[in-house]
Length: 85
Image (cartoon, rainbow, N blue to C red; front, top):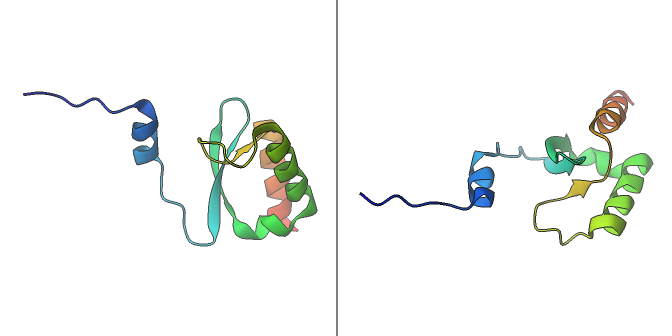
């Protein structure tokens, strides 16, 4: 029996949990940890500033998804603050 080897990028995409309606996935920090966040965060000025940084650093045509150039702990603190605002 012949086995088929898939590239790691294909395997990673298959293992990622689906994104619920009204949310989107971003990848944060050097480890590119995946976070699924509500689309309502797009209205937040601080989050918009992070998106501008991401565009400057990576562009929006990045093949591995939207990457936020931010420390994971800082991103979690920001999103926790936005959740209660």
